[in-house]
Image (tube, rainbow, N blue to C red; front, side, top):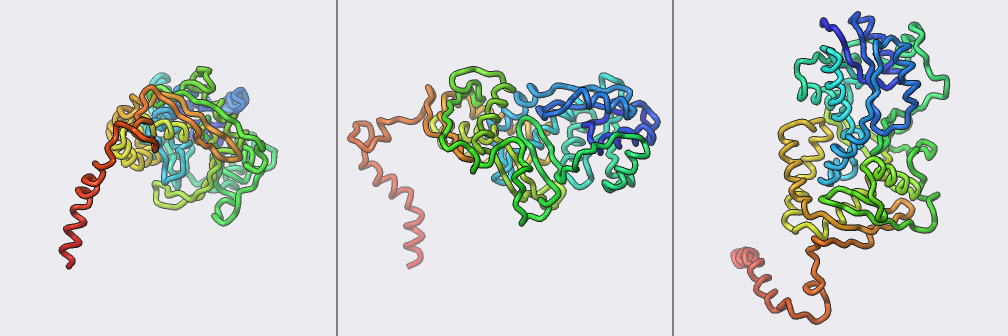
Length: 398
């Protein structure tokens, strides 16, 4: 493969630092190290310094936090996206915004190739590359893990030492983790045995429910067309609002998940996740929908959630079918306006009140007291007509 310039998705960790040096040697061309700030806790000055010291022609750090929350997290939560009944898609949602910016930088810098540090076993290689191909299929794609012989940590460390690439001297974290403003994930180490319970010191974003406060925290969240806009009456921008939810959720032990999921490539994988703010947001959003969405609209929309979530998980964010589903999901959100009151307590997020100017709930119809709007005698005919096919079936059995 002949290339003139490569944009590498770079984190400054061992893998992408080795990849940076390896690309420069293998392709003998300038490498631009691109790092995306999607809300992870990182020393960006150190990342920039290490990238330049490792041989990058330029290090570009893009602040994508606002775009990530506004254009990826909020749309997914308007759709109540959840994968295999549990996973709130924290890593899956970050990949398309990271890859989109990488494609933009490639165009800006005149690069004809892009590269990433995802392995040939995981989902991320698919998510990155489907985005590259959807947005600029002329770019060449280099995936070192699928073509080089540095296929173990031991070999990576040896390569790093040979090329004077700094290796952290702190005790090695036994887990592979991915962090952004929506979540942090953990894989590997003792977690590869699905019988092992995660160690408490592994968690970063949340207290254990046992150590959470003994008194509940109450909050109110306002929504406009399915998007959260305020907490306790204070309007906040997307990033500030989500950070606030993370703080509230983490302090109350909310958002931990331990699951075995099905990767797109075919294998099962055990992951442990912390998604404090996202867990609160989804609970509040679904609760507000109970009074603002028509029953049949909700039924049809809910039937689409598994397919919608699968498209995100598998990397098809920029596909035409995803565009169609997003428009459908957003159409259902026009009346999802109002306020939800939640009780946060020891790992639980409990909606305890909801109100909306678009509410379809009518106390006049629902009351157990005497009313003048509902004729209970009408229910007899309703029941008989709904049972007609079962009556016919019963007669035919005789």
